[in-house]
Every structure is written in structure tokens, then in C-alpha cells.
Length: 303
Image (tube, rainbow, N blue to C red):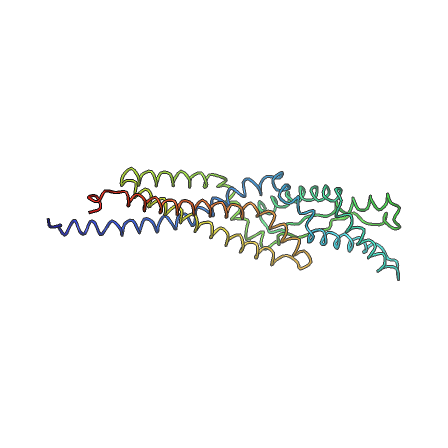
């Protein structure tokens, strides 16, 4: 039995069409997966004060944060104290005292208080019209240190000023650059993620109903590959964003700022691994299922 040229042409067009649709789906997922993750992150963590504070609260035990806080508090206090030849001795004593204080529960409470106030600065920087640096004010820490030292009878402790002393975590230039992006992500909220899942269910379902199980598995494999690609893009975006933010921070605050950025983006890095795992499972599972389905077909169907 001879096959007509038109049938051959139609048959050869099917793989080309499938490849084109797969490429489009991969590109869409490479955009939709990072967009969905970032929009949900802004809505659920950056815009929520309690979640924001919960994310950065463990940093009270971070060595970089404790060192930066001790350095800043000591420098601010010593500006108001002039003891001549004893200056360096008092500075060292005060630094060790503050450093010891950073290991206490009182410091952790003061750190949470400072970050609750800092979240307002984050919201203001992302909602405002002009760039302002996002900072963490260590005044609550200084106040608590002063109270402890005065209570313990440390000389000159009552002269320590309780003034705004800041750790910069986002420079003004970066605030300007990120403002429009964060507004877009805030408007998206969790809906890009919901829309992406609904879209994928429809695509796989339609392919399965119209063209059969093998086509549905092919689309599922493509979705899995798209998830893997999207996870990689998201991880790159997180890394590039971290680098740009930290590079603009003053050198004295850089280690602490990096710790804060890492804490705030921890959920995004977890999302990367989760999406990567789901994508790999879908890809491998669909490919294995297609191979098994092909082997179980009767010999007549194969011909």
C-alpha cells in the first residue's frame, strides 16, 4: 500500500509542530516560574512585617551581624567620651562588653525591635518617589547596652548617647532600581503562580484528550524541563540581585548586609530547589512512562 505525499507531509509536520510548541512552552516557563516565585515572595515575606522580622530574627546570632553591631555601637559611644590616654583602653573594654551583650536574649529582643522598625523603611523605600537607603537602626541596641552598663556601675556608661546608628542593607541607587520591579511584583501577588499552575494543567489535559496519552506525557516532560529551566533562571536572578545589592553597601556594613539579604532570600533559594525537584521528577517520570508505554504496545500497533 502506497502512502500519499500529502500524508507524508502531514506526518513530518507533526514533530516540527511539537518541537515549536515545546520551545514556546519552555520559554514561557523560564519567565513564569521566576515571576511567580518573586511575586509570591514579595507578597508573603517582604510586605508582611511579622514574616520579615521572623526571617531576619535568627541573624542576631550571626557572627557578621554581631561584629558589625558591636563595632558601630562602640564607635558611636566613643565619639562622646574623651578620656585622653585611657581612650583606647576604654574603647576595648566597651567593645568587649557590647560584643558580650550581643550573645544575650536582650540583644535578640533589641534586634527584633530594630528590624520591625526597619521593615517600615523597606516599605517606604519601595513605595516612595525618591531613593533612600534602607537601614537597620541600632538605637534600640545602644539603649539596652547603656541600661545594662549603668545598672552594672560601669564608669561613663551614662554618657553613651542613644542616637540613630545604622547598618545599611540597601543603597539609595538600588532602591531606585528595584522600586518599579517591586511594585509590579506586589500587584501580581500570588496570582502569577496560580495562573501558571492552571495554565499547565490545561495544556497537559488538552494534549492528552486531543492527541492521546503519549502526547500528554510529551507535554508533561516539556513542563518538567521548563520547571528546571525556570528554577535555574530564578537562582541566577537571586545571585545577581544579591551581588548588586551588596556591592552598593558601605564596606563596613557589607558582611552584615549580605547576611540580611541571604536571610530574606532564603525562601527563594528553597523554592529553587523545590521547583528543580518537581521539574526533574516530571521530566524523568514522563520519559520513563513514554518508554514503558511504547514497549507495551502490540507489535501490530508498532508497525
